[in-house]
Image (cartoon, rainbow, N blue to C red; front, side, top):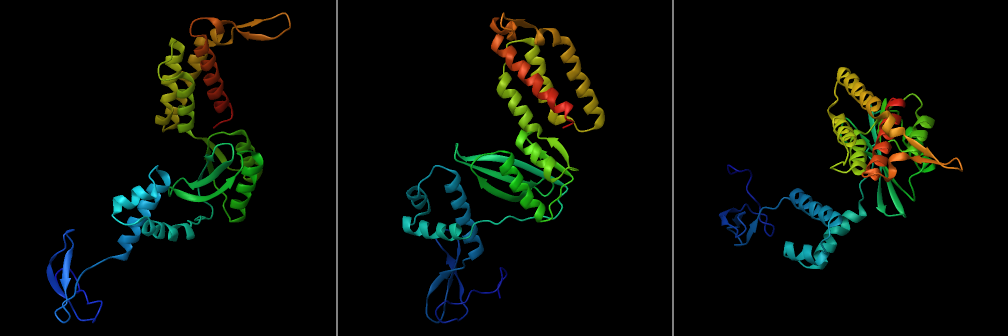
Length: 282
């Protein structure tokens, strides 16, 4: 027995080994006094963890197997053998009965070909279930949510991006669940439409309002934010809704062709986007 733990046994004769300096890599080296064989102590869990980290990094990155093999100092065949074990054991969903908060989202795997529907536990912060689908629509979300319901998943609150098909599916499967619009999606979409530097004063004020949404924590802050948004609406209402009608009855926004007209249309889009969110109580 040593201060660092039990002595390593010789893999050839089974006798206890003794400390014998260090390996060039810095690892403690052991030597068998009977057969004279040298060895180092290896932990399989650390080895598997390191290989899994390399596999995930290769899967999500742009490196080739040749580059990974060169970095690890092994052959491409060795790296392929490491990764083969992970391909044969894909991760399995960890279904949690009746999670309080369920986060739903979809991400594109192959554009226009494959989408991945994901459900996560909003409190434990880990994925609950996932399923591939050809497109994000009401039918795909309905099948996905019904599968969750059959596994005793009935959340109190559902956090989502407000996609119409998803909202309808949630109402069909969990009519009593409360819906919370994902504020990250709201801020991201508003910043995309308004850009980081809006050309009008109305756009600057609106972007500042939307960026303040994630900092709303209490009911008092919520009421204050809604009052500020309605104040912005009243201030720019006439300008936002000013229309011009053509002979055929079709209309367009009067200020569309003015300087910053494209920005004004985007401001109207963001204003409508946030207003609908408030009317739906999300």
